Length: 243
Image (cartoon, rainbow, N blue to C red; front, side, top):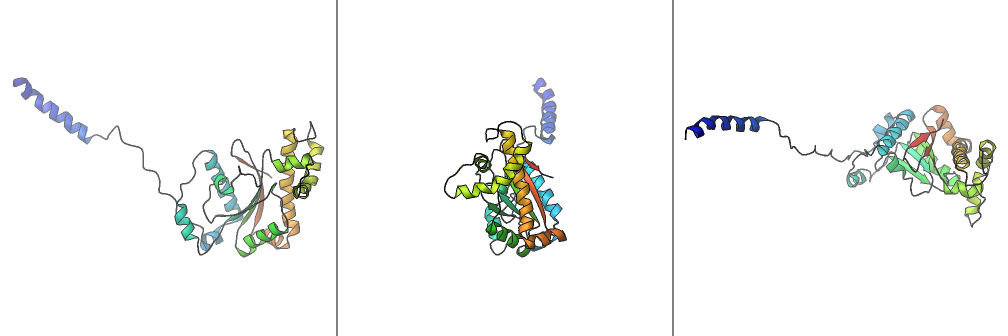
């Protein structure tokens, strides 16, 4: 009994300290609530082309680092049902491994996306870009190529197949310029040639968009719209921006 009496205060004090101390087995922090916000007319108007480019660069950085923004897509779909105010237009390749909204970590209503093998422009794509910029207010046009592009490889090897034949001829000028500088084999087995031709194609499309569309040329000259070119790396997920 004497031992129990002496131990009672000690046990009581230990229990009190344990109760007042922060738990060492606390669970992980709660996940952030999914984003529900969407682009509005006011937000879009406040952006500059440089702002949008910086936003896409940061979004790609999050994608590469595995930090994609959690989003409530159902809420975003409902919020954009009556109107859209995208910040940018992305002309990318048809390739299934290059989804612009994901690699730039964007939500519903943030981007206009045009996709065609090899990211080349034609009159329908130019008309779509004119709508997206002049009519709908997008501030940036991105022409996005990617590594190991099958369309570029086909153009280098002069593949012919149905309507694809005419599409691949769109790359002849870019391939010709790339061959002047690239060393090694002159066919698609040469990764240096494929990458150089793809970059040349991106630059050519950027130039063609301005030269073939007076509407977009005026917006670029005024500074209301900018055009940027990038190369997406299929292996790393990173976009390298061209000068």
